[in-house]
Length: 448
Image (tube, rainbow, N blue to C red):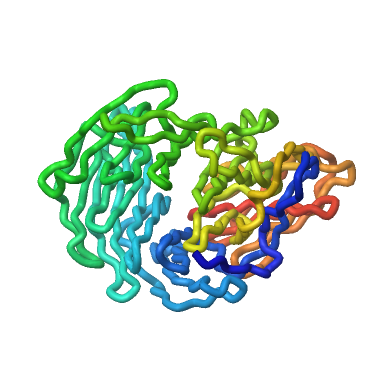
């Protein structure tokens, strides 16, 4: 496969040379000129990126397709603007792409009270999108329960023929009849998986164990081949590569599907000892590298990217890393590199040279942090800060147009500050803290 250079001074996992690396990071970063205000998805057969940017206040969203075949000059090749969303939603849960087709789910959860008794509600919609033919809502579900909150929902997986949906009351399978049409063919109401993926014509779902379904029996039915509950079973996000299944389980568990349609554990990507208590947010497979985004619990500004060499699948090896305000989502591209989407921007990770590093020793930089709560908020939001230098810092709040809504100096190294947004319209805002030449940015949403 032809490799593409990306001379943007991008996030580059640099081959440092043989030996132990003790620098604070082995990646060089610069902003990739892609929109940063939405979700992104790629298709490994196409050199382009789909960006979905929701305007949840006005129930509209924008869909764009960017050609990255010349990475130093991404080019907008198509867009759908001001697309209406039926109903009111809080989250764009999942987005996936196959060729020119995009599938996404929008979700909302809320609680109402009948007297003093809380009632749990949820709403889920599945959309099928074509850049040529527009948007169609395929499925809409509504959940109400006096005792139990809704299970995790909204996950999707797609292949050449079917859409697999993690619904409110179970796993649903839709047959895709066109770019904007799909028909429900089966539902497994007892199974509401957290995550799922397709491998070797089998659907793997995971909750507190895993289930293996035979896709050859569709569209007649979804037949369960095996089920396992065990301490090593994959939990969290799932993906596949070269016939192997990768899942989050206190690290990244690597499994293979055996002749009995059960999973065998063949390898494990372990976080370095200094990061054992960090959370894995997302990961992807780019060629022979596994890249993951992780963070210190509840501190999005204390986070990092790790890249592992998986050429030897039974013994993965750390090959590159970066630490900073880097909590977000990573997705692989068709040229075996990675696009990283964080709250501060969209970045490119050049994977070409990282496999030459012999050994890396992690050194975590010391950083100040800020926390924002509640988020979303209505009326006022509290900004907590910690570990600032003795000189304090400068805090400002601005909207998507760059307009400043508040600016203040922070005295002291630890404390909190409250922004009263009574005069500000509903929408998305950014809280920026500058101190000693470093900048941390947190997005917040104001609801009215």
